[in-house]
Image (cartoon, rainbow, N blue to C red; front, side, top):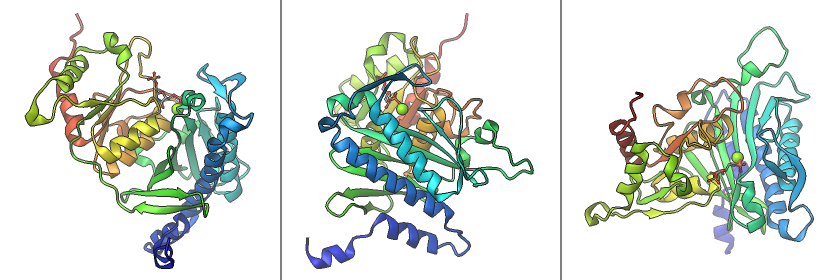
Length: 341
Ligand code: AHM
Ligand code: MG
């Protein structure tokens, strides 16, 4: 790289400071939080890249709160993120896929609540397929009682102050939003810095890719079956048949959807009556990102980010992606809605 090219690179640190300077009243606390997450992401990325050559790979013999097998890297990522958030003393509690209840931090007076899935798609670790970390940040509503309570964290997605993901793929990519569009960064391992790759990424308004685990086809609702058949039909004018792509790592599937457009669906089914994915640390943050890039995210009935949560680990179906594709699948769901006998 030439010296001139080097001088034009904007690091995550610089970008966060520049963005903060645009708001004269900003305290810098949220910026600090994003920097801490960025640092933890670099450490996780390093471990993910060498997973095959260290004994960190594989099951650690325990199960998480959902009864799933936990891999050592999940625990490593969980600990890295928690200790990064602990360092900056502005987060009062963390809710993580890997912990049953809330994790109260030493800085219990801190004003932020962080939800996270430290390593999403972890069943893909052993087969060298992309995985990711997801985070979602809320402010704690001010009140007199200083005790930390789980109810403080039960806020709808529209109240997120920031959210993002880190994708550990062929390169490590970080995407985040504070509600002013979505910025994308790529980790340059030679200098250990996230470099700005797109300050305002936009999702295509329509895409020719659908992404769903078709193994559960038989237990889908009629409208969804019809929509997927529609995607597979031949029609040159509308670019069909669409391509099917399903990685099985939500972060990777959403990242592709963000860049190339199309739709990602995880519906309810016989096996997962409420859907498999978690509202608070998978669907809300990724919906915030997709909406900020110009896309849409619904549970088949309404906007994901308007769901009033009743539990920190609750599940939801999700239809997310380019606005035209999401609107279209919703039309199918309504047209072929099953009427209770
Ligand atoms: P995880 O949090 O245990 O890794 O599970 C979530 C993952 C998502 O990344 C992905 O979209 C989904 O599970 C895939 O599920 P399935 O194998 O049922 O298609
Ligand atoms: Mg997950």
